[in-house]
Amino acid sequence: MKKVLVLGAHLDDSVIAMGGTIAKLVKSGVQVDVFCFGNGDEAYTHPGDSANAVKRFTRDATKAHEVLGVNSFECYGVPDFGVDATREFYQQCIRVIRQHQPDVIFAHWWNEYFQHHGMATISRDAWNQAAWACSADFGVTPHRARKYFHFEVNDPLPEPTHIFDITETFEDKMRAWMCFEDAHDHLGELDNALEARARYHGSRVGVKYGEPFRQSFYLLDTIHTAEELFR
Ligand SMILES: [Zn+2]
Image (cartoon, rainbow, N blue to C red; front, side, top):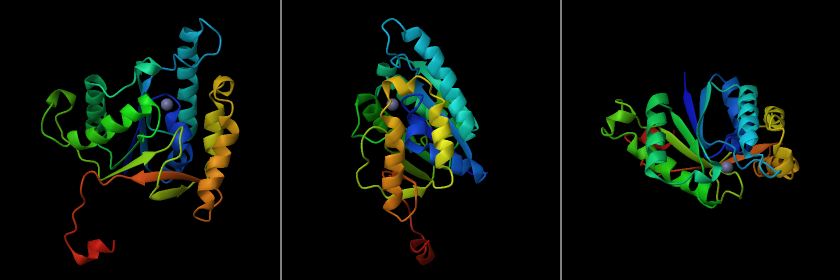
């Protein structure tokens, strides 16, 4: 079975960025695991309601990922604005890559606010670091995922290399997104934006709905044979 790991800063990033792709991969028999860091403590609109927001957002995110059919959904559980490119979070990215041994990793891109920016750095570097035979406390089996893709959450992804056709699973994405009951208070504009974005990206490749990704070649590919050049 092929395995995909999604690394997100917050509880809802994976749904916003690639809910349709996750649902389509799962329906195709791919195992998808999602790991994130922020616990939703900023997802509140009434003063003093932060603690309840953590409970609600965690509950809703769990439900949303069940809708998408992921194999596992784990949150490291730190404050939303505490997510950054630090030693601790870098270690956790290495750990989760070695734990899940994914064929493909999806994670953030840099041109977003600092938590997503930091995740773009540590996720991409952990892709490399997880393959080194060191830091054995984070898993004794080094692992190099074959491919790595960046996704967009808040801001347009520059020069995507791939648009994933999510025409069949766009409704699954929206059903997952609607699980975040409170998100429509603090992120209300996203309800329409998610459809507009998916329509736009789909139109770039002649399908109804799409999600954009940018493949990383930070770790080099090797071409051994002429056939591999044309694969
Ligand atoms: Zn986020």
